[in-house]
Length: 212
Image (cartoon, rainbow, N blue to C red; front, side, top):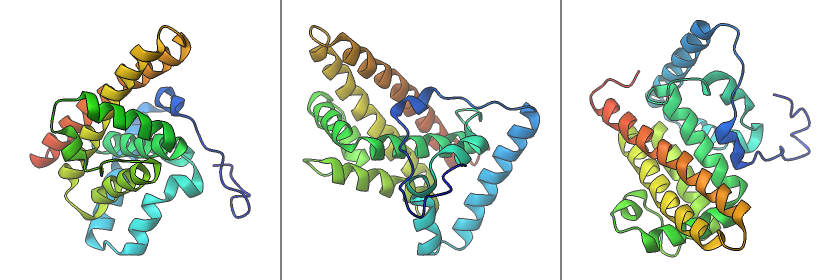
């Protein structure tokens, strides 16, 4: 990580395009081993002693240090694995923190268009402005470390599905006048739809004690 001056300057925010970023590895087997061992060790240690200070540091990690260290550990992990789930939750948090006003706009549109219980499962207040969405995604991430892990994953998946619905409908609105923005929203929707499926699958695996 290169934010040596973070004591004086906030780290540069990474955009939502991080969903498509990949990091090189010289030895895939070693990368996989380290990813799984660090994810399991971190979760076990925090759950054995879930002190508020430790959990607070984990929730605030990307705000203080950026995403690169986490990416080096977990970004190449299978999507339906423990490190893969943790990676997706941190990316989801970063996406909301990076542009909370846009996320709030999309979320409000999604909850208006979506005829499902996903907005209830996600747990956002109504209306949900930028501050409320930042607080929600932080609460969901916190739940991984000090709550029911599967419930936190289900909430994150539901959150993604609301965002998917909002992104699709906004993309339709923008298509006639701003096709590039419409394309970006469509890409966002597709990516988050994958995340929702993966997180739901991870929650089911966790409940069967099979999320490795």
